[in-house]
Image (spheres, rainbow, N blue to C red):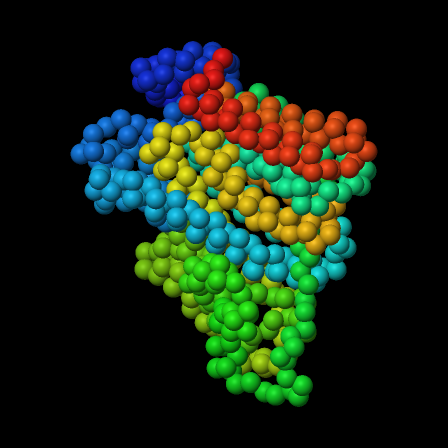
Amino acid sequence: MRSVLLIATLITALRSDYVASQNPSALSQLTAVNRTASGNNRAKENAITPTVYVLKNSQDQCDKVMNLSASQRCEFVRSTPDCAADGGFINYPWITFCLLSPKLLPLAIFLYIVWLLVLFLVLGLIASEFFCPNLSAISSTLRLTHNVAGVTFLALGNGAPDVFSAMAAFSHPQTAGLAIGALFGAGIFVTTVVAGSIALVKPFTAASRPFLRDVIFYMAAVFWTFIILYRGHIDLRETFDIENSYTENLNGNIHVQDEYEPLLPFTESTANIFLKAINPVDTRTWRRSHWGWKVLKIIQLPFEMVLLLTVPLVDSDKEDRNWKRPLNCLHLITAPLVCVLTFKSGIYGLYLIEGAIPVWLLTALIGVFLSGMVFYSTTNEHPPPYHFLFSLLGFVVSALWINVVASEVVNVLHLLGVILRLSNTVLGLTLLAWGNSIGDCFADITIARQGYPRMAISACFGGIIFNMLFGVGLGCLLQMLTHNNGFVMLQPEGLLCWVLAAALGLSLVLSFVLVPLQCFHLSRAYGVFLLLFYVVFLIIALLTEFGKISV
């Protein structure tokens, strides 16, 4: 044990020499941590591990690639671990600096931004069409009340893109700033831009108790996160101290009886059922839709086809609960394959059992066996008694797909930060926060226009409370389990992180004070004030990022 500690101490000392040459302030930081490691052996072990973690967090080696000449960049990204795509399937640094010519760098940036928009569309597609319906079916099967379902399953469904993006960002120390920036940035965006837009579209009087409750709980969540950032670490106990905040669900999915359903029952062939089940386009809806919707549908089409073939979908609003016998039998093969080939970037799926049989092949064979049993023991007309198990399988598979897409989003944002020399925090509070919140923005404004502004304003606070608590809690918990640590060291990326926290806290305090002074009436003037507040915050954040504001 002493020899191990000695080697670790020597490595830490050598690392300190390197960091001192790159960042003199890091040397004093390292020395302070090493002084605390002079106790017993157990204290030494606990002190050495977070020391390395802090250095990784504060110094992303991949950022240096833009300081090199074009001929040296490819070799640098090949040999630098921070440039490796550990959490995704696409190696963006290798594509950018090895595959493409340096002259095509502006084109690559444009294509990455377009790809980022497509990924956000896919995130929304998975969450709304597969993740949320399966969660609703699970809550219906368990016979949960609307309140319990709202604060558990459906809250998780609404916040799935935000939570999984935060978890993916926390999976690597060099991208943790994305999670902090996105969670705080989304909070400011929703409580100012979305809430202000609701007041502009439909001035109304908010319900006093629910409004104060939501603002107070959100302020408590923000204060808790601020304390964690100020202390610089979060321990295992705190990742479970998640507030039981009341979250109102606004998934007002209205099931309308199809006017084209036949009056007399008839029996469809198995092949016809399968072809209709995997067809993502309804011809009647296509003819009635706007051209913009058609463009988005065409972009989503290949991804939706893959999801239909791999994710079981149980709809509790339908009489047959969306039982599609041939497709559901196929899901017993494809869904487990997705699980083993997407978890941890597929490293477990490619593992060879006894050095001969890959895990994915064994999984496929078991899936074929189960699929045959279900196919020959069921009928097309009636779902089996165990059909609810498909909702559990669909929940797991859709969650894994969300995690895959969220990992790609984080990797693209990390690369854009490297190329454009932007910090992860500013990318999180802008692109990632906007991408994750734009769907909520349009949904809440639509609800307000339909005459339900109280529901819309409740959504502004309920969802972001859940996202912040679960995003930080689950992200740090996974980091602890991965590194076998009792706590995670968090180091804010300079002044910008504190600007974020201060702006979010100030916006909540202003809402807590100004709205009661107006007798809880949210007027158009108040909506304009909130929009101007966000513009001022964004200007200050960008000036801070580019060094125009410093302390």
